Image 1 (cartoon, rainbow, N blue to C red):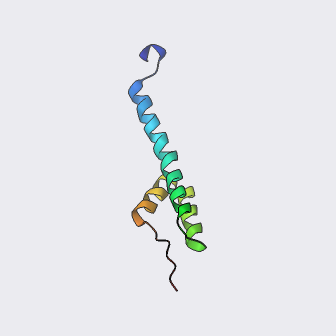
Image 2: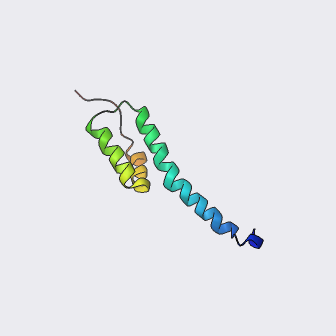
Length: 71
């Protein structure tokens, strides 16, 4: 690939970065859609994940919000 002017290691680093920046938030949003959340908590999580994709998705996986509703 060097003959084409493409550095293989740099390309791999770029692909991993793109997968993390796009894939992780998408997976977090899909998991959030499966939970039975509604109202303000759902809106806040979607906003955090979309506003700060990588950190929001990591925060979502660390906190792991529950879908149960307290009465």
